Image (cartoon, rainbow, N blue to C red; front, side, top):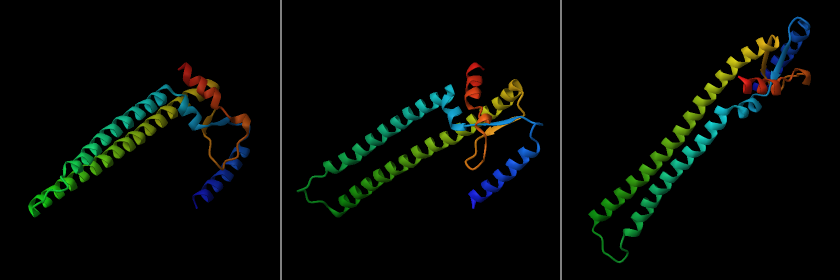
Length: 166
């Protein structure tokens, strides 16, 4: 259903552009191409890799501690029911701790990605206004999948150059 809405929007947008042809100059850009050229995007990607590596190392350390807990158990020793219960609870708590840490780590990375994506889109939208003013264009927008647009209206490379000079 989502694609139907995009198709309807694309058709309406196409006709609206044709009726106003000559009155306004418009264009589009490829959002992903613009994002990967931004220095703050590259920096964030490096920081995300570092954060992921750090969290993975911590998780590996916790997992090794958990594995060592099993090696401490003496196989031929006779255990009392209380000792078995205590050991079982301890191992269960360690396992829960590892799972909780894993969920927190995934949440931290996910939240960071969402916040950064919001910030980068806000930054780009602010720069779009300045770019349009500088180029005398009415508006440019991120390229939509189903939208028909002429290659003459692609301002991706010019927009990237503009962002690098800002």
